[in-house]
Length: 393
Image (cartoon, rainbow, N blue to C red):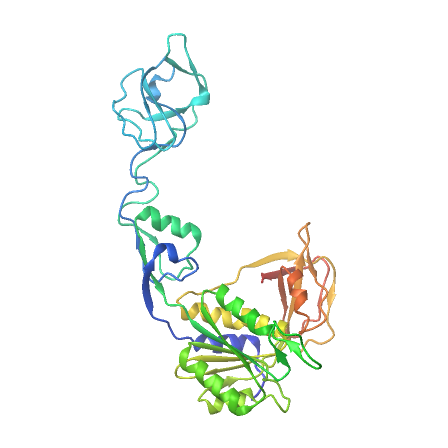
């Protein structure tokens, strides 16, 4: 199977997305979920004309006169009196503005006379009244489907009285590591062994993307064992991630095992660096990625291909924000036959600087990275001061 470009891989992956179903959950449990139904407001917001400052509610026409104080109106208490000529009521922020008042003067712009009356000593700038329904009117849609729910959205739901919310069900993700050389993090590696970091990195990436992630352990370099683990993962999940065993070595048999398990392989090599030996296929029950064994490669391919797929399956068209910044120094690479993902940091003065990076096994380089920049095929150099798109990771 021939190597394809990243753009072709991205298009193929997103075209393979299927939708998860929906469920209704308490709004307090909806953080980072994808909204699947509209949220409407059951009241006007604000629900009444309210004061936006501490001060005195009065009539603007009377601001040159001394004003008689009728009452004090705390937040949460209805006014007892209407405002007439040369009258005012002391009012707190958030309280209902009394009938007859058309402005609230700030307490710091007033003075109390010897007779106990209020005198306006400031310069009139605005009414300081939030008008009923100026933010949202009853029946308005305040949140539309397809958004990832953030803390501020939960505040909107609370204000709108929307205490149950319809969301897309989480994508169920299976994570499998492959290779005889792997041991779990709690073990001390023996000769020729390494700790399994990929699985826990992918689990964290999957959970950060709003999924329900399940770890299926290490599949040894045995076709029957690997087939059994993969088959079990496919039957119980929407998305299966296998890391390792997808390059060209004698023990890299994941693609053939996937085909035996009923997976139709759509591509097996992508023209990117790192991450070339990435396999993707579809099964009637799940979509499947065979990711490279090197941790930086698997990290990058998750962020570039898997994460957008997860969000699309849950009804969200995810677009990663790119920040355009200048390069601190010139960057060059020797070969340009693949798209390159370069880990970078952002300096305190707003420049982009590549971090020290020794290759696709150098996962600790990413802990010092703010993001990555992408060099297209055929591009070998980025000049000092040249503007680049930085994608946060």
